[in-house]
Image 1 (cartoon, helix red, strand yellow):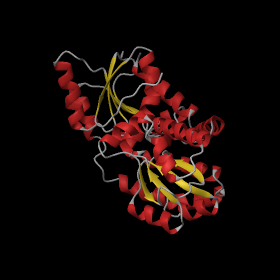
Image 2 (tube, helix red, strand yellow):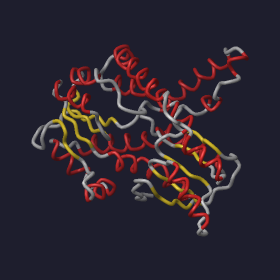
Image 3 (spheres, helix red, strand yellow):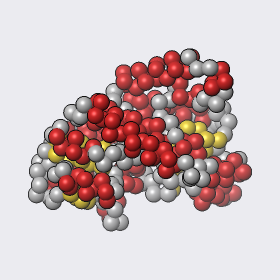
Image 4 (tube, one colour):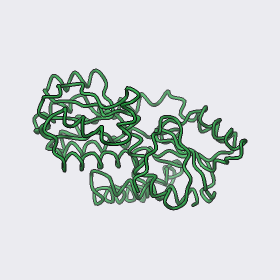
Amino acid sequence: MKIKEIYEYVIARGMEKDPRGIDVVKGKLAREKKRYEEMKEEDKKSYDTDRLTNPYSDTRVLFGDPDTEVNRMLVGIDIEVGEVLLADRLGEKGKKIDLIMSHHPEGKALSGLHDVMHLQEDILANYGVPINVAEGIMVSRIGEVKRGLMPLNHNRAVDAAKILGLPIMSAHTVADNHVTTYLQELMDKEKPATLGDIVKLLKTIPEYAEADKHGAGPNIVVGNKERRAGKILVDMTGGTSGSEDAYAKLSQAGVGTLLVMHIGEKHRKEAEKNHVNVIIAGHMASDSIGMNLLLDGLEDLGLEIVTCSGFIRNKRS
């Protein structure tokens, strides 16, 4: 496959599993196209035209000729300079890497991370929070994340890849959509009664079972194993952690338990204050599930995947 075909594939698959629904995502793209058409020519010069076909600003080809043929990819949760050097070293040892794929965004995909957080507004609305309230509580958090990203050295790994002539891309929300939808469908189907039942169910999933061996498996951080779960919300997509104000609104909307990849201490305290149970499923394991569900189809098409940097590979198809 060519790089551009891999890029188009992950976008299409990410849209299919978007918790907002495909029609909402297509509507977003249509509005973006209209906005672009109404722009002044001067503004179009710096416009990222990928936004017209890709609704996820944290998923981008960061370097490389789109027509490059790819037979083998190095895939990791985090790709930094060390992993880029690893790809180059593998090439020296006769295992040529045609494309590096990171899950967590790098380069312009990292600087655009805040933009995908609007996805969380629709998820909150789907669970009973009025959309005007959801947008209101997310606006300050999105601004906070945007400002926090500004001083970062976004292009460090990308620059290393350029020097070594190694194509590189990031696939973030497209994968997070997969794990979110997968786990939400599982919770809705199995209907675990207690927090202990949720943890037990998660540990039947290979990635979580493997992470649990290394002390990074599912953990209850608000509540206890005897607590009843109530309505379960899987919150694992939309860039990064949302607003601390969301917990009060979710509690009022009837959500009993949040299943997340990770949670900051301030967010955890707000959840506890509002009597919302929280289970941390595990960061690397959750990201691995999303990437596995995304990449299985590519491997079926003949691509070889070499894993690194915390990626727990488990093929389902």
